Image (cartoon, rainbow, N blue to C red; front, side):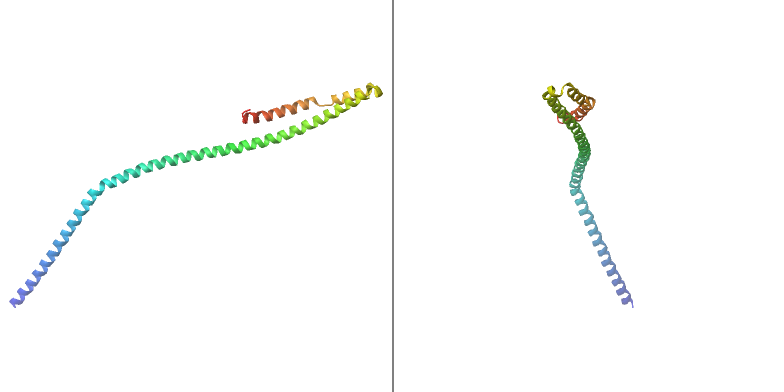
Length: 168
């Protein structure tokens, strides 16, 4: 039985030796892993630092580009608003010019009629005499000079901003 006890003890000792060898092998592998990891960190740290620095520089440039784009967008928005205002002003001016032109046409028609009447009076002065001449003078007096002057002023007020706009 003593042999049996020694055999068991020898078996247990072999198991402990194997277990100790496994633990030592695991410790050596772990130590090698830590060593390799340390070498990798030491070797790649400058490269990682360089990549981080370049990324920071790139981000700064991107931020500048974004800020420039925002300024440009605001400028474009302002220009679009100015163009819209200019278009409205031009449309209103054209509308006013149309009204003034209609008034001028009426005055010209009246002047044409008065001129024709004066010509007719001059041709028939001997036949009909002064009464017809006075009638034609009354027609000329009926021309609303103030209205004509207002129409001319309105045309001037409308055309002057347009002239400035186009550099005239």
